[in-house]
Image 1 (cartoon, rainbow, N blue to C red):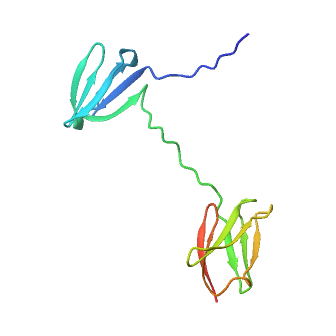
Image 2 (spheres, rainbow, N blue to C red):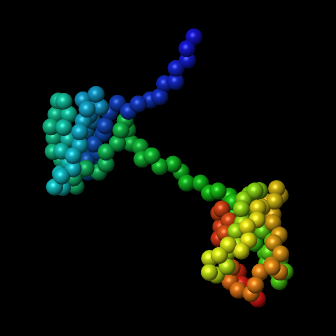
Image 3 (tube, one colour):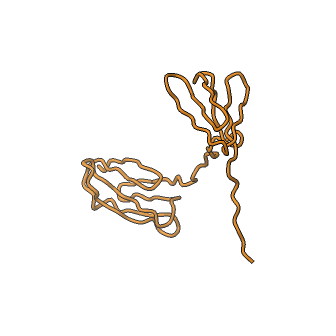
Length: 145
């Protein structure tokens, strides 16, 4: 016995006009659309039609689809707490890389978030100045005095 995966293929193209009218063309008729001089020229095996581009609201295949999925948030916000001696990161993804750059853009430190989603960095090795901390989902700056 052989199992075949069947995927739905579009069979029609829909031209949605500004008037609310919907015109359907079969893809089996191999429609060809050309936009030129503010007109849309649609040619098939059985038809040859010219629309003013301003009269077309949209064109879709097998119904109204836009290919856009609902946006979701990553939930990977995390936060940093600074003291004179330490920077503590919490709420980050385990294994995520944390990079610290100085004001000139030079990488001064690169560490990985611990398995519990935290990382404590000793600031004693850093000179006074402005630093940028970059993670996968966030960037922020701090000043070491």
